[in-house]
Image 1 (cartoon, rainbow, N blue to C red):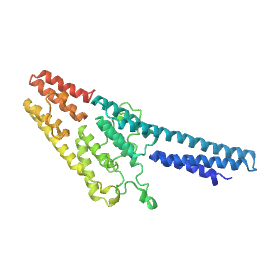
Image 2 (cartoon, rainbow, N blue to C red):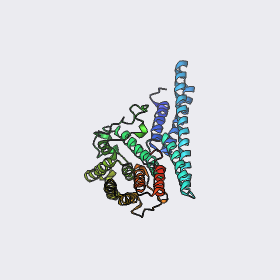
Image 3 (spheres, rainbow, N blue to C red):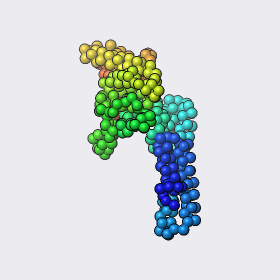
Image 4 (tube, rainbow, N blue to C red):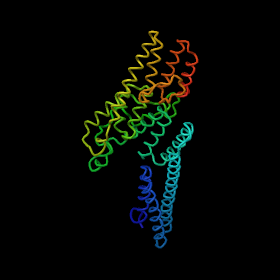
Length: 358
């Protein structure tokens, strides 16, 4: 009846494997492994009960086996918690709100359920993609960027782990070890009020390390978040890093052949955003407020595929982000200079709707 062999050892290994499967988001497989662990532990308990051995040894064995059953039972409760959250998310995801406000409430609920599932399965890339999409729907671009960068920092922790016979399991076989992105960047001094984790952003060089470690389904929204939060240098370097990685990759079966047509479109939007906003700023400094306001309005339509700007600022469907708050604020300054005060109030209101603390 050694703990290093037979049903007892099998129970321990099954429970550990189940926990790893659960963390990775393989819920069905985790469920089966937890139940198998419990069955193995109970089998071992029946064997122990029928053996003649010292009482201390029997009690020690029973204690360890019962602990395995307890651990696996707790694991099954986490499986249930994941499934409850996933089912609730599915219901919310399938319901269409009767208004924009109702849609927003649905997306807030959806995000809550996704976060609950992620607390159980932080290694599920599918859940991370769903969270990023939910944040994009809510136009919470700064939070979206922070989530992507924290995920990339987690991925740096596996740099150099998949060697020799494990090489085939490497999720990023073409990616060189990170040069600037540190795995503990978001873990250092978590209680530092002057540098809260939720507001930390990566340097341009660290962003280059980050983008090659993110799932392809997340990349378009991450780059968009960089632009909409006015992180233009990071956005430009991220685009160049993705293009270089995709053109140089050798493992075409992993991530290399994923189509990246969106990249040229996003880079064009970045170019136009920077150019038109700079022209607007120049016109404003030169006192040409009418044309400056027009340039800022053009900037605001870039994410609306170039559709016309409604002069009633409150009726435009803004993409959100710090960029659009700034553009509305700049238009308000132009309208104030032109003595169009009511229109200026609407632009300020639009800016505050996007960034309440702006």
